[in-house]
Length: 241
Image (cartoon, rainbow, N blue to C red):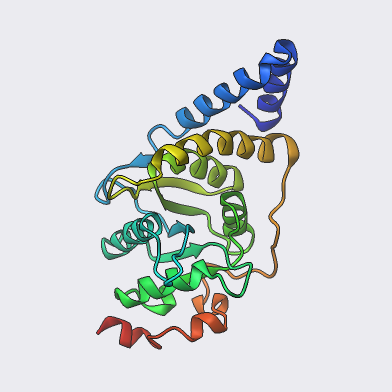
């Protein structure tokens, strides 16, 4: 169904239901968004269809500078895809809005230390939200096909936002453990799916930052700033040892 038709259907439904329509509509958005990703979420690297890019969505970095368990698992999923030849490059996208907090430098270094060459890692410093990450993947990095690497609870929304941005997207489940905050994350995700739908279908929300084009078919170094250049292991050859 075309976007304007979906928007009209939901608007009419909410208006008809009145105050109770918000709750009913929220449940409906969640159910529809999860069902829309049926057949696009894969449990194993072997089952994932090949795509150009692995998109690793940012998550918390610990005060020590190490990735949180959730972020580490997302990176491990992307690494497995790259080693299996399922993707040719990796795009790490996350929060670097403040100088003292840099998700993408941590992500870059984690991959570099495990053997991924510098020229295969693109860095998006302005992936402040999943919506921003997917819009920027298309409008800045010109990504048109991708495997999204994140936890299961996050994949339906991520794939929806990727597809709405114009990416032929599938997802790889990154869960490698039972997460301590899984119930909280599940509750937040319910509201986040509704917000994502509103951003796309109603509000037309734009990314906070865009900037110049850095094609994913070009040199990855075009996306590397000084924080990336200062990583502990300074070359792809060093990373391979």
